[in-house]
Length: 99
Image (tube, rainbow, N blue to C red; front, side):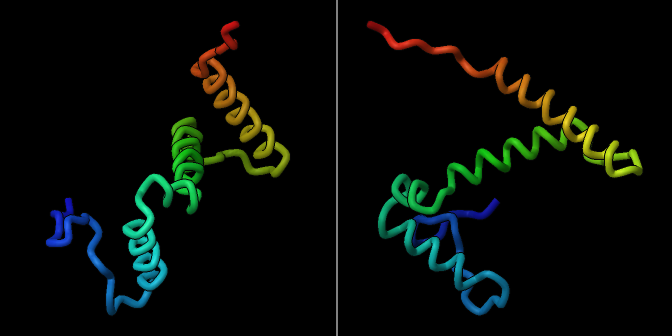
């Protein structure tokens, strides 16, 4: 776990690191300027988080595809997708507008 820094953030600056440091530093700076809620809407963070969660669920149904032919791979992944969609439908509340 990263401990909080003097500026009150949990995100250390990545100055001098070669990989994605400039993009990440800009994102952290933008989040500080506009606030977390606005930044999440602006950056699409919530949508990405939902996709990552759904992919995690998909992988829990079986991470590997053991069949060899492409047609069978498509069939197996289609079955997994159908199962996941049914689980999602079961967990989605049914709402109706109150009059």
